[in-house]
Image (cartoon, rainbow over all chains, first blue to last red):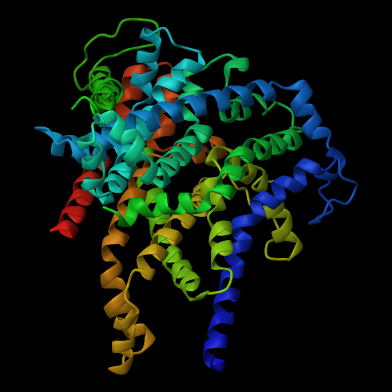
Length: 280
Length: 280
């Protein structure tokens, strides 16, 4: 490697440093705040980037014992897992049908999927809250399990279609000739090959459901039924000032499952992200 | 057909129907708890006559334009830096994506604390290093509040831009650059004549997608400012939430949300044109 290229490479790393600081500092500061005593958090005179007065877990303790945080965590997990399962199931079937068994209007339906993929949740939360009311689902976790797939299914279907297209048709035709039904061919032959796509779809759905706020805030009104996001925004913020410790602890703890899933499945995550931009 | 049916029913019932219902609600004077009376386009006229809605229009335009431009420029810069990095690219990519992976509701709570005028680390740090002498009224002054929500939107969206652009960059053949180099083109010339034209489809898709997601943002503004001070940061979603749910004027709330729709239609139209152009 020439000297010039070495210098260029070093320059790239140095150029990335300020951005890394910008990207990570908020998380670091949240962690620091969640571990500090109140006396240290609210000391306006001292600015330190370490915990000075001894690490404390009091904010996490408060969260676990004196707030509804455990209930919210449970609700969020239930809702996210159920909505993800429903979405992946519906999308796999739909994507397979659209790619493999074309029917009259399937091209239009594909365009419809693409357009609904662009519909942001904030466009329809008011009519949906009325519909949730008609269905008698207000203030229940079921309201979220039913509505979250609306923004997950279009994305997952679109993503899975791009995976199914790449799988050779002959593979399942062999299976069907050997006496398998369409369902068996899909489940036993196509799905194992398309597994990366299914994992990516599930990962994205789970992340989206876990962090959703506006539906959760609109459809659910009583404290113990809330999800983590709606609970943190509505209930952890109190009238007095001294709520920053538990709030930061809550926000960090709430992010943990998503970050763990991301840590293990990063490559799937990136392939899904990139699929949006290049895999049309 | 049978495979597609469940997903089709879900999307018809919970996207297409709510959309029509939103159109209907927007033409009535529906209040919470009382039947709505048909009022034609009066909700829309009332909105245009009101200051808050005109503010919302202006804010949405400003917020979206500034945030998307910054994300595009910085995202391209980051992608170029990342492309030159060889050792540790995987790890760096993983870290860079974190702000985008963590649910925004939770990380924005952290930013809210960073922006706290008295105890917030941003003001304390800027005073400490002597850049400012008086605390910046983040979130309580119209100018700084808009700056704050834009900063957080950029922080959150930049990784998506950078990683997507990176995927576009690595798909450009190295031979083109070598040929240009032999022909005597400098780095600037090959960037303008090779990188930009070949990146255009990816650039277009990402920018369009980001426009719809930025203009429909709810989480950042709701948590940081609730649309304040003096409605200077209200976007369609936050104003619709305030009008339709907090104040119970459901007809007007639905009308406000519907203003996201023209943006959606435009983005969908342009994206379909780009993708059609690619496949032909």
